[in-house]
Length: 400
Picture 1 (tube, rainbow, N blue to C red):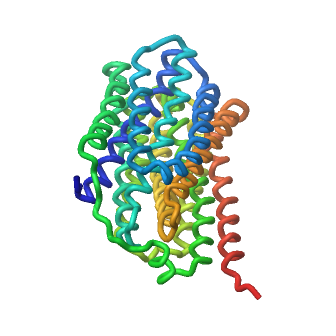
Picture 2: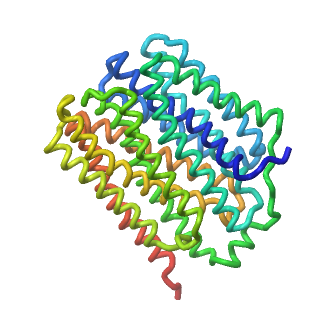
Picture 3: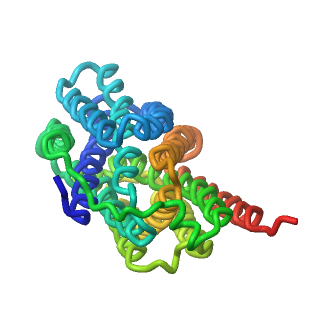
């Protein structure tokens, strides 16, 4: 059945990453508030799940190219539904830890296949449009709607976020299985279209640089999403307030996705990619530095100062992650034949960024300070900026 492109590219990512946002906020909060785990222990659990995601994405994208994008999409949705349902059984701590570790498994099948599906047989302008709409959808779901609803529903009942997280992927699975959606194809040979506009050497240079950029951006996003809710509990904020504050990250992402969809001026221009990362790095460094001296991990009296420092930092991190994600997804799909493979690499690098944030952030929280992950993340981003600039210059240098 032919589906309208815009609503399909928006609503499906919104639903699936709302599911992801619900679980990724609710599960750590439950592990800390109900089971009493430390922030560093929670980071270790989430990092282990991320390793599973990285490995599965790497092979899942290649499998999608062979088995068919629609087939692997349905496999991912089925796994997501079953895993979200398993949280409702509320077993002992080891059982809950296993559920948390395996939740990214379904996403690792779904996202590479879905991105390849929407990027099949389209030209450059349509590719950018679809990635933009898709990115707004997942950003609102993962970093805005999901966290907000998770915080609010946890105050009502601890099972409610996981009930919603079960319904959403199951509903999308029903659509794919029975309606068999199809998008309009432009019947354009992707590689030929790309060669007409941009030389292959330049395309590959920006693809490799954007892959470094997506790691740095995801480290920032993961640090915020993993550790800010936990420190929010130390500041004696309600779960509803924590979810609302994390929403600022999603608003920054979604806003920049919309802007990038409306213009092509950022295509293959290094200044856009690097400037956004400088902004994100500075926001995180200032939040960590000022927060350490003005707030620490104090209680309710210091929460207002902490929130005032956190909101602009989260917004800057959202802008950075939006630019880097859009760039990585666009360069991975435009002009490339093996779209499932490249989407899988793109999603694997997202997992690498989460792993660095969760393992490294957990160690930093344990051995330095609860605000140190943000400072270290900012320094890492600045180092990655230098790396990306060198990649571009080296690959674009004329060969003798």
